[in-house]
Amino acid sequence: MRLPLTFILITVLLDAMGIGLIVPVMPDLILELQGGTLAQAALWGGILSTVFAVMQFLFGPLLGSLSDRFGRKPILIISLLVMSVDYLVMATTYSIWLLLLLRIIGGITAASGATAGAYIADISEPEQKAANFGLLGAAFGLGFVLGPLVGGFLGGFGTRAPFFAAAILAALNAAFGYLVLKETVTNQIMRGFSWTRANPFGALRHISRLPGIGWLLIVYFTYSVAFYVYPAVWAYFTQERFGWGPQTIGISLALFGLTMAVVQGGLIRIILKWAGERFTVIYGHLFDMIAFFLLAFVTSGVIALFLTPFAALGAVITPAIQGIMSKIVSDDAQGELQGVLVSLNALAMITAPMAMTWIFAFFTSSTTPLYLPGAPFLLSLVLIAISLLVFLRYREATN
Image (cartoon, rainbow, N blue to C red; front, side, top):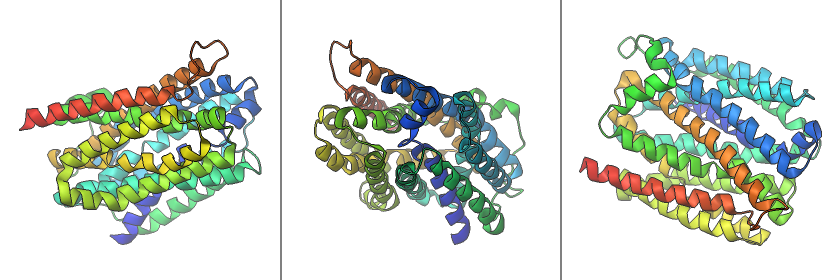
């Protein structure tokens, strides 16, 4: 299963690149297409991120349920091919409205992450699920490394160059998957397709009825909103606070992603073996609370670069929670579960960019009563505290 697993990890990496690739060049690209001020560009960036997430919210359960019925392989290959075309058109557009449409299509293809997660669940033993979901997180982290690096480096040659590279990578990975991916949905676990469970509300209602799942879904969503402060405002925050350009922004996000990949791909296995899934989740919350507090008030760009990898050390929460939930759900509903998680993650991507960019714009505008570019990180700190309290409540309810 080594080559199929490699394909799955590359697919998740490309999904992450779809976020990280455009972050370093997005402020300049929006200004190029629309004009206006940096604060106005930040608001447009929030809109583009939101429509991307809306499509993931709507289509995550659908693609997950389709993969439960028709298999993981066709869903993944088709999504990659559409993603490649989407990037290619994005590289040539000069219309902000066409860019908006392309982010809608990109959000649909990125919803295939539900299918990738279901594939990992299919091939993992119960005791290996959290650690293997950590590999997905590591691939996502590497996507955060490669995306900003490619976007920041190629951004020096123009705002369009990164998208050509992404189109080529997606097409090559589709060909690779077609050759090596083995189908894991057998007749024994194949589930009939139902529109009732293929929409985000129906799937969420069904999954949340399982014992303990409801509490964990709240934790997953709240943490995700807090986490997405990074792609939502990092480029705007660092440009405003430290005067960073695309290259420096790309390097900082690469440091974050690389550390996150090391944590989720390796360190989490040590923590899980030593402390178990529950303590791993608690540790991650406490670490993130410290990181968000420091980032909210940092004034030195050098210190911020040192804090960037430090902040990623708490990135053990998501795979640990996924592992707990995947062991509760039956084998024929793994795609449905991952679809629900994609939808909740998408809701976080909808909520976070709009909230975080609005807060950033308010606290950096010329009329603000308090100049505080790091204000979005304080909001994330509060959300992390709420998430931890809910998880502790979950522990009490299941003991």
